[in-house]
Image (cartoon, rainbow, N blue to C red; front, side):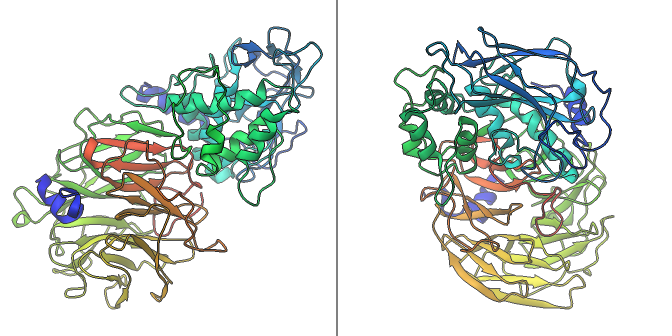
Amino acid sequence: MAGRLFSLLERSACAASIAPALLSLMLMLMAGCGGGSSSTNGGSGGGPPVNPGSGTAFQGTVNHGTQAVSGASVQLYAAGASGLGSAASALLSTPVSTDANGKFNIPTSYACPSSSSLLYLVANGGNPGLTAGTSNSALTMMTAVGPCGSLASGESFEINELTTVGSVAALAQFMSVGAGANLGASSSNAQGLGNAFAKVANLVNTATGAVPGPGLPAGATAPVAELNTLADILSGCVGSSGTGGECSNLFAAATPSGAMPPTNTLDAALLIAQNPANNVSAIFGLLPGTPPFQPPLTSAPGDWTIAISYSGGGIHQPSSLAIDADGNVWVADYDTSAVSELSPQGAALSPVGGFSGGGLFESYGLTIDNGGNVWVTDQESASVNHGQGALTELNSSGTVLSGTDGFFAGGIDFPLAAASDTAGNIWVANWGAGTATLLSNTGAPLSGTAGFGSGQLAFPVALAVDADQNAWFANSSGTTVTRISLDGSQISQSTVGSGPDGVAIDAHGNVWVANYYDNSISELSSSGSVIAAGYTGGGLYRPKGMAIDGQGNVWAVNHLATTISVLQGADSSAPGTAISPAGGLGASAGLSLPFGIAIDSSGSVWVSSFNNNLVVEFVGAASPVKTPLLGPAAQP
């Protein structure tokens, strides 16, 4: 069975712990964070405060490595709700100061905008162990706290270089330069921001300042040495007077082309997180001779993306994946004919062997409809439809909705890909028959007995749906993509590169196609006219799965290069220009035959790694996307 997957898609590959109940509680607390306007002068952030002047008292410590930072100014913020990187609300009328041991106390005098408001701490200045009376004005560090309503009296938080790196990595897409006072999301993306705050606990323990965090699920692997290295690099500036080469060198190396250099360590960390391929060697060269956080990397990485790998919930030879409205990640497990589900924090929500039954067989493509139901293409079928495959539908709990054998009417024939439109209709690419099947949300065929497009599709392997409900199919055998209207009456073809193997549609309706054999990506207009025959660079090599992020950037997995690539999208001044380096992103992330890709509402990029049974998350690497994906990618 697995051999068929390689023959169809791998082509030359052979030759060349948080409990679910606790997670649900966390997400419930985080949902709906913030509303209305916010300010940095202690404003309410929108709406009446909860229990005015009756906040929960807690404490913490500010350290440079293990050295106490005395005299630091510590402010408590509630994340903003007026857009990405919007101004946060300062909750303390007067910031508190750290004592000689770096300790501080947050009194009860603050008021949260709401119990679900997401809080974080920022420390500015202070003496990191230098001559008495010295203060480092470039010292700015942070740590995520979480929902206001979940704070326990007397709880303690650490603020150091590691909590700064871990918090920034998870929250980078919600931050803008501004010494920590700019962190927020639109009110329509409370879920994404809440999930991002919870993700901090995968990377760092905010109570102790160590890595990894207590939220990292069993069996998952976090890049501990890379996190330590980034913290060590920040420490050179944090532990200085702020006026010497330690800070000026860091600020220069962290600055991307055309940007203003940062003036503090938090903004430097943010620029590195948001531009992970920028000046990598120069930044690594700032590693101190005696790093305070051990162990660090022994050589410069290919980039500074932060990747976590997950293996729970029955993941085995994962192919396609998709993300639901809550941020849960659904994965088709090809070899075990099952479906896995991970929480937004990567914890297994499916049983050890995944969800099975209902005709699941060689699970391949996967999509989620507007009701949160999961549709899986069964490449072949054990006992129905002459063995030529079916579709299995599951609800959000993993219960089969499509009967014992799945849906197979309407011309289903070795289906490899599926996509849902905004109305809940399901389009299917039939590799075997070279046709397209359209099913209603009840599984009834809408495309006749034989499907649409006979003779006009050539071994279609991927598809995407545009805003007009047209479906675009990548024809792997040839050089074309085919567009089919909702009623099947209009069919047209556009010429792209060789071996189209992935397709995605941006907010403008532009169609982006991964050309497997050309190592390129084509761009078409919404009408199918060619805008660019093939963009190259950025590490593109045998590109396959594709995704568009909230800024319109184009992401692709490099199936035979164990990396991912990202290009500037249609909104940029230079569409198709590589953002990823020449070798691609994530060379050290452990990908092996990467297959599918999806972006969540927190900005994390999720990739299925077929050959080593992993799902890899590039934490906070992309602009957030509304999920589930119904038609073109859109901002939440």
